[in-house]
Image (cartoon, rainbow, N blue to C red; front, side):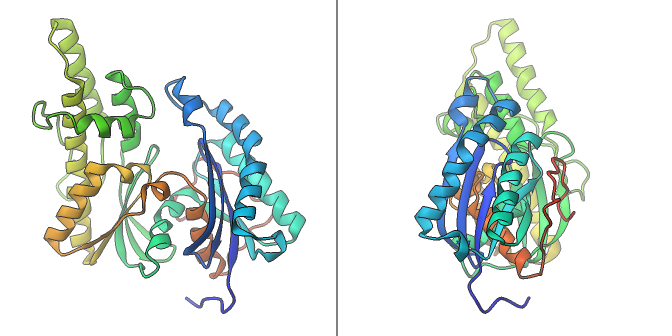
Length: 343
């Protein structure tokens, strides 16, 4: 890939779910500023993200986060090389807010517009803190809406080896957390409770599917947890929520790690990466590091702030699109069901 001799400075906007974020990123790897306005406290009341409320809050917050990102980076709009924005997948109303703002900015300051796939952004978060990290590698992408195993052959060159056939792993975490009375968001709450529980007290099923499959399925373990809770409540048995959390997490982490290691062996790579909100999970990070070390693989995982939704990762992904010559028109539209590799 031929890189630009001049610094490429990109203002990136992310609004695919319930974080309104903006960042200024230089050459895809150096974060000059990153601002995130989270809506977690608002949606916690409802037990999950309410799309209409998320869209309204994006409208309220987006001007502020962009101005702060530019101020923090000590940049003027004329200093920018391009404007980037997430255009899918995600909540359509939320996506449209960020997209409309980015298109208006690009037009007003006469800069190129680059649309970015949200999951590609998560993958590219790995390039931010380790400036020497590069393809090829196998990536596990795990979040509230996505569970993918990818062979990353090059920048923007992905082979999807496996994906979830039903629930995403983050979705399963949220539903199990709700069932045991922990509320939203489920991931960090189950992770914390699991530390206080016994992972062997309750054994939940591990779903590996066909012998050679890299796909995932998490609806079965979610149902197994619900069935366990219902039976215990009907028979009056005490429920140790920490043990339930620990048993659930143990089963999920075991499958995620085992399939990732098998995928890395199958593609003959030496590096493994993780991305997405669930990759902030402490048990997953610990177990993956152990298994990678045992098998001679290096492991790259972003800091937790770059695992959850942020605009710095979008700026990184946009850089690699920019140097390939990708430019989008002002007719770019939100695509809530955008597939990785589509444009």
